[in-house]
Length: 242
Image 1 (cartoon, rainbow, N blue to C red):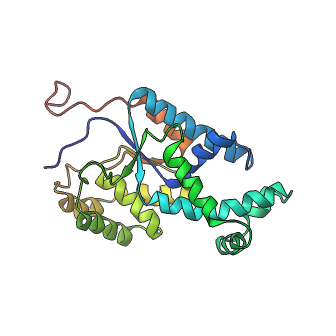
Image 2 (cartoon, rainbow, N blue to C red):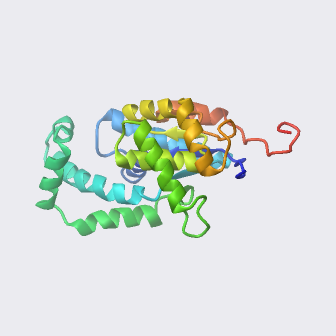
Image 3 (spheres, helix red, strand yellow):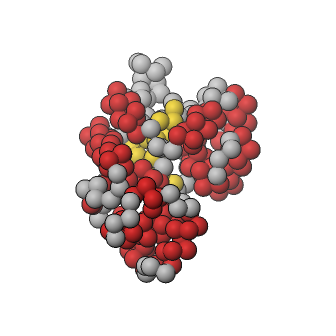
């Protein structure tokens, strides 16, 4: 049976990483009050994890997602600086923002934003990218792909979100944190589905009763409180976990 991690692991989706990064770099200079509050809450979550020695992770695919999101944000930031209301800018469709971007900005600037995240963001050393280049991957590509395929059949979510959900299962994360309420609801239902547990467990070498799925899928405001109450899991064989 695969080993069970003893240090709590918090999985954060791409938008959470970006919210904290933007807030830390710009002090919430872009967006409305709810967006700034979200960025501040993610920073609080990361501070808490760093203080308690907890692990934070996201899928390496998030780097590609960041390029796509920055592609739209660069255009949005330019329009907001011109005085266009925040809600009006974000009311545009994804394709409208992407088409407008190509006529407004340099793609190299977007790559530079991700490079900055990789090298200078103060929480970068806290956030692990799955899979990690410096160590063996927890599972083979075929196993990860099989988990992703199973999730795609059970949950009505996008392919990128399936990758995030699969990573939480493969890495045995304690919590999944996202401010996408639709995604949270779908992932929580997934974790609570007995048939999903029974199908995915043997792929990773577990019995259905032994596989550890995340305790929940939470908004960051709720996650801060939950993480504040978490303690390291007792190691197998310890007095509290014989």
